[in-house]
Amino acid sequence: MALRFFPLLLCLFSLVFGVARASNPAEVVSKAVLLEDKTEEQISLIQSADPEPQLIALLTLWKEGGILLLEKPDKQKVPVRLEDKKDADDKQAAFLLDGHPLLNAAGQPVRLLASDLSAAETDSELRSAMKSILDLSGLAAPDKTSRLQAVETLGMEQNPARLPALRGRLAKETDAQVLHGINEAIALTEIKSADPETVTSACRTLGDLGSIRSQDALGAIAKESGPQARAAQDALRKIELHLLYVNTLGTLFRGLSLGSVLLVAALGLAVTFGLMGVINMAHGEMIAVGAYTTYVVQCIFGPGLELSPFGLHLSFPSLKATGWLYESYFLFAIPLSFLTAALAGIALERFVIRFLYRRPLESLLATWGVSLVLQQLFRLTFGANNVQVASPSWLSGHWTLNDVSLGWNRVFVIGFAIVIVIGVFLLLSRTPLGLLIRAVMQNRSMAACMGVRTERVNRLTFGLGSGLAGLAGAFLSQIGNVGPSLGQSYIVDAFMTVVVGGVGSLFGTIFSALGIGMADQSLQQILGNPVLGKILVLAGIILFLQWRPAGLFVTSSRSIDN
Image (cartoon, rainbow, N blue to C red; front, side):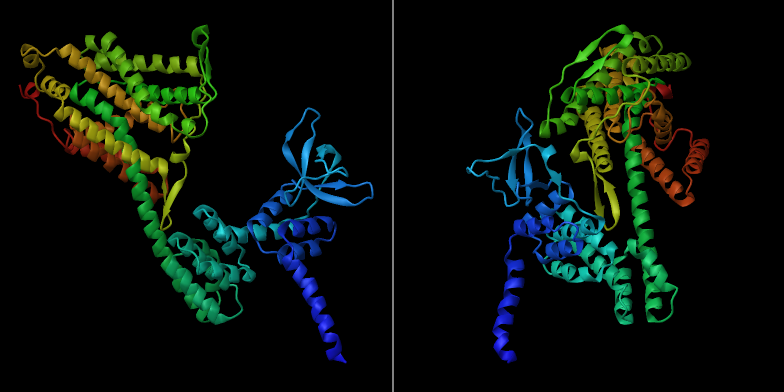
């Protein structure tokens, strides 16, 4: 008797489950949308479908309120989505969830008003189920960032139901960083297991991986007793060693980047103060000139700029650039910031500095007054508040290497400083201008007797130093806000860098900048107090100069020897 009904039961089983699996994503979502107020059935239905791209797109649309319900005259409801473009009557083209246009009785496409439709509702349980499906779909995303994000989300959920999907992706994944994340997510999930051996193995895996995110979970297990507690304690010790490694490398990288910032800011000062002997307190304002030039270039590529200094209305047109053209604005800002600051430096030398050579106190006071005037000019032109310079996408974000985060902007400043140092070295040692600068530095009177136009060399040298400061400002605009007092934040550190390295020594400036940057970041990391770290760095510099007043590298000069 039972055998007689077996074929019928088999047919019914195949019909029920076969239809659910055979249904395409549009049919699945359409059925789920129409099951209003039946959350459990909706969740069961969407979980029964394969997480293919079309299903993911429809669930995302539903979650964001993009699926609407059209009620027919017979009270039946049809799930639809509307095209973004509206006509003169604010109507939009309607489409079924499978992508086909909604047709009327005459077979013509239908246009609807969004206000005449109701949104397909969701509750917290349904949205949570959608999120789980979307997270699982992220495991197979084409881009590495999405896969990493999905793996981290699933790992923090610690849901055993996600283990098959994680293990399945483990066999297909080829990227080392994502593989590391999958192994970590699996181990994080397994430590919630009721099996002590599984928990012990997961603790050992997390320790070998140096999983920083698992410290809280391992700490809870370590308070228990048994093999899993000892495994958790061993894992925590390994993670602490890994943290020490990460913090040390991170400190070195931040110190190197800070030293590079100091180097870029101090290179121009090394030329004007080190080679020319001019104490230029307006050097910081040359940095601000370069930063504001970058801001103006960004505005020209973007929305344009309106300024009203001294009651005058200045309008900078907009290129309305988008995409890669707007992203390239910084490449145009770099040479323009150098040129603008160089012209400002030449004007400063022409109208102020050239009357004050060999008069250090007067030049210090005069350039300090110029710095105050320039700061007020910045306030009158751009306002007293900071202006925001947006970094292009290729300078945003970071690169993670074994849990050490390397910001692209900091990597850029390190490379930027290397290029500038090489360029300045080649300029001073391999060009006619460099030969003239070195000749005037060695003995100004003898160089003049040999026919060197020392006034012109002074002007070009001052322009070079100011232009380098402008380059520093262009980069500093990418790591912080630009304001009238931007240069004052770096002028003291720049002078310390030049003096410690040795006045007139390019290599001394390099070693000094990197040393001060490393010491500053290391002391901040060790002491946990940035202010105290800076105080100790300043005290160390004072003591060093007491022992070696000429700095690390002493530059000899015939004029000094005489």
